[in-house]
Image 1: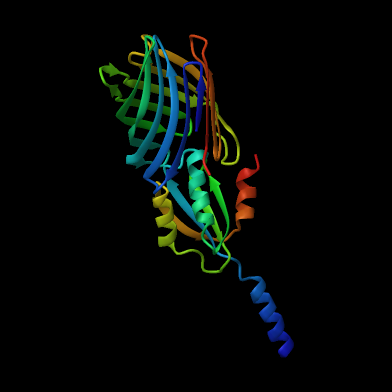
Image 2: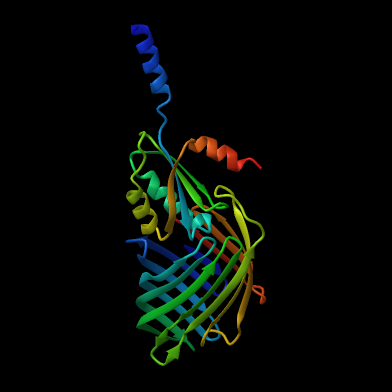
Length: 182
Length: 105
């Protein structure tokens, strides 16, 4: 998985141990108001609960991350170990997608908690073999890094193993997200 | 008499189709997640072909043998992939025929 934007970049790889559990490794960098964060994180992902209905799927996920982060602030740089849990819930049908997540990240006296909300719709239903286009509106906020709520209108394309998103935030920051499953 | 028996044998062998099963799956809402089901089913050595239909929430499994894949095995694979099975039935059509029926628009 790759995320690219002016303020946040991430490369992430994970291995599914079971249908409910995965282990992953991610490298990321976030830049904001006076901060530059560079981290390496090992994480465990657990699907806590899923409700399958005929036309929908509802999930509750838990991410448990632990790593080392270099926090640069006002020309000072510190390496800090951290533990960061994230709880995420999503609901999806063939035409509708809603997701909310909250990541707790406290390092020393800094609070980098991130909240995200995504909602969107697919323009039309597609068959299994076809590429399905979606419009997703993403709202996110990371404490300390930015005072502002970031809003990103995004085009999402899904074609079996390939999941691609491209958007431009209302502040003009382009974002790319690419995911591929083997 | 021998000729009749021989012709009958050929006729019967031509009519012994591979088994095809139709599985109704709950929670199968996108291709990105449904491909996990397709990949898992294709790892069964007796499976010849798999067809996923998101519009009608079913998966078709065509076997290389005439008895099909045990229902319990299908159910376990789909549940392990994170979905629920509503119904499994044996049908009298090939994946190729079903694909042609549903994909023509």
